[in-house]
Structures are given as structure tokens and as C-alpha cells.
Length: 180
Image (tube, rainbow, N blue to C red; front, top):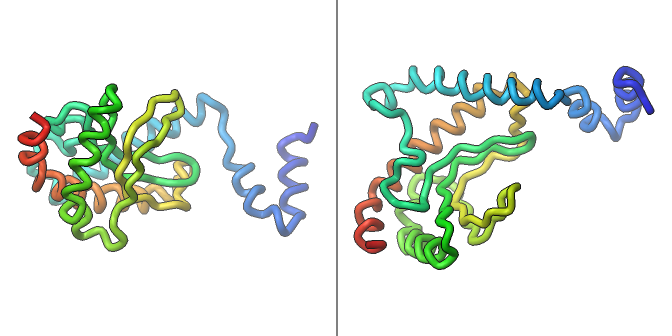
């Protein structure tokens, strides 16, 4: 078994492995990763406090308070990608499909001001096995472990969630009426 130092030296000496070596150096213990994630979200909350569009709001983001059961707006980030999304997570598959199909009806409105539109994923399985539907914009190449990327990740989150919330609010009352 290599020590971390020997392994890092080995990978750095191999041209084809430079990306892996960089990721290898970014490994954290479970506790360190948990703390890093917590610090990420605390810093994001502080960053949101200085966003002019959010300063007048009592609550910064809609997120789980969409007024539609089984439909949430979310931020997500991992070691490879960042997402801003609508997640349809109703427990009943029929209800999830009903909500997703209704959202598709308003696709033009939801995708307004998203240069490349949104990704529409009818069936996504979370790590714990729950099936949900997702409508999202994603940026690959972001890594929560790279603190130097945090300002860019925060800008991605803020810019895209402001657009997604605005578009969602245009159709929320219609969704509520049609879903009963």
C-alpha cells in the first residue's frame, strides 16, 4: 500500500494521471468533508446577504416553500457538478408524473432566459433509492472540495436560481389551479 506522499509522487510523475493526482490531493476524511460542506453552505448564505435582488426578501429563496406539495426548488453540488433545479419528489409516482407533465406544458416559460434551456429528467434515482423527476441547469467542472471555485459556484447558483424562481412564480398559480 502506498503512503499518500508516495502515491502523490507516483501520480505526479505520470503525465496521463495529472488530473487524478490533483483529485487525489483533494481527498478528505469523512469529518473533513462534512465540515467543508457545512462551511460551503454557511459561506453561501453570507454571500446571498449581499445580493441586491435578495436584500428585500424576508426569506432568501423559495426552495421548499413552493406552495405545491411534492415540488421543490433546490441547489446541489458534489465533486464534479453543480445544479440548480426543480425537483418533483411526490411519493406517489402518479402524482410525480402529473406534476412533471404539467411543468412540461409550461416548458417555454420555465426555460425563458436559460441560454441552453433546461435539462428535463423524468426519472432520477437519488443515492437512497428514491425516484424523483428533475428539471435543471447544470455546470460540470465544479468541485465543492475546491474552495477557490466557491465564488464561481455561488454566482452560478445565484444567477440561475433567480431566473428559475422568477419563471416558476409566473406559473405557480396556474399549477396550483390545475393540480387542485
